[in-house]
Structure formats: structure tokens, C-alpha cells
Amino acid sequence: MMEIVKCKGSDLDRTAKFYDEVVIYLDENNINYPQWKYNIYPSRSSVQKAIENKGQYICIENGEVIGGFILNEDPQGAYEKGEWQKNLLPGEFLVIHTLATKGGHYNKGIGKAMIEFCISYGKENGYKGIRLDAVPDNLPARRLYEKLGFTFAGDKNLERYDQNIPLFSLFELNF
View 1 (cartoon, rainbow, N blue to C red):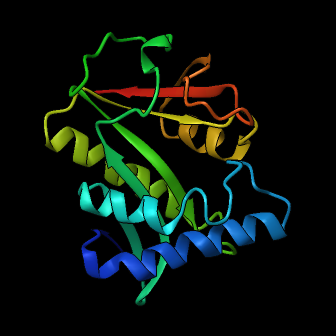
View 2: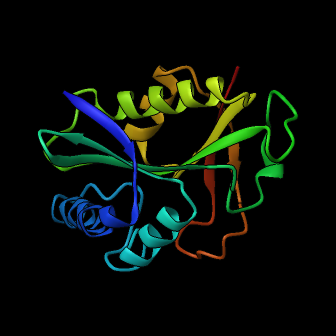
């Protein structure tokens, strides 16, 4: 049975190892759609920061980390550029970051379970919606978001100063 938990400091090693393994798997299989870079992002330091900010979650099955994501209110970029259906103010929506499933565990409902967890959390805590972004070529992620009711809000430069990813595809789900 899958369980989604908020990470504590004691989860740092296994969560950082999970993301390292994900990036290696994506690179080795030529499917690095999010364009993540080993030891750069996601990395031990980004996981540690997310845990300290109380936004890092992991999905566990039989004691093994099979998924992970960050859920917070920080879009980490110029989200005001989005072609949003609803004009939500900062603090009125959650943002999902760094959503990943362990290599070899695709199409088993893990990503769906993590997104549904975020939706339930948002509704239960009075948020008006969820927003997220993806690299435009990340078709598996885009299909998942759209399948779960998210709508496309444009390809925009979020001013994150990553020259390798000039545009991000924005998505929203309003409650």
C-alpha cells in the first residue's frame, strides 16, 4: 500500500538518494524530459531546503521511496505571466514542484496518487487552486496533469535564469 508522508530531517538521506536515482535513470534511458541535472537539481541541498521549509513529501511503498514532490506556495518564478483562468493572489494557491516517480515504476498510478494527495490537501486547507509548471517537451507530465483536470495556462518565461529552459508550460486546477 502506498503512503504519502511529509519529510522530516531523518528522511533527508533516502529522499536525496531517491532523486539522484531518478535523474540517473532518466539520463541513462534518454527520457530526461524535465531536464534535471545530477547533483544540481534536484539535489541533496534542494531536498534539504524543501524539508526545512516543510514542503517535501515522499511516496513510500513497502518501505521504499517510489515517488516524491514539493508542495508549497512559492512559484519560484514569474507566475504572474500565466494566462490563468482565475486571478488568484499569492497564498491562495499551492504549487507542485519536482514531482517524480522512481524509474521502472511508471504507469502504476504513483503520479496520479501524488497529484490527488495535493488536490485533497489544497481543498482541505482552504486553497483556491493548484498551479505548476513543466518543461514544454515533458509530454508524460503534461498528459498526467491534463488527465487529472489541470488546464494549460501558456508557455512562459518564468525568469528563472536557466538558459537551457527558456519557457515553461503552466497548468492550473481551480477548486
